[in-house]
Length: 186
Image 1: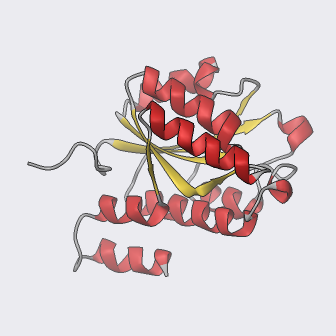
Image 2 (image 1 turned 180 degrees about the vertical axis):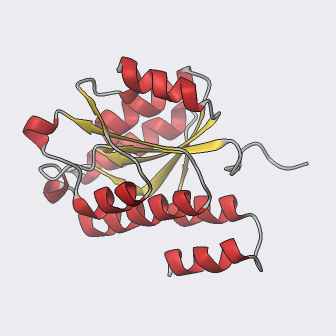
């Protein structure tokens, strides 16, 4: 029997939260975080996962950073504007989550202790399994990042990495998808 604690290509979706141009420059290790998020988006596209992206008050915080916006655009994903910290508190986003109807949500974004954490907690309350990719989230301060990840994990979120998630989605080597995945993760 396969574990229900692993990401499953037929049950998962990707949610990308608020990688915005006026936030990203203030995030610790921003380049590595953006690279991990871009790999995650390209991998989700490879595996045909539904995706949802958000922006928080774009008038003040700007659009999505191009490192994330470009792979999302290539996947046909347009970010949804929100004013709430939790993406799940926004009616349009909650409706989209219901339409997609995937029990697993792979989550990345900024900031780990605000919008990402509140979204993760609400996803759990909605009955979703949440896989938070620690290398694809960030906060302005290390303490906030660490406590955001810790609080999410203690609440029941599965804290993992982009590479772990992508190889769980792939499931096996020796396939065309595996070869394409290797190009993404290298």
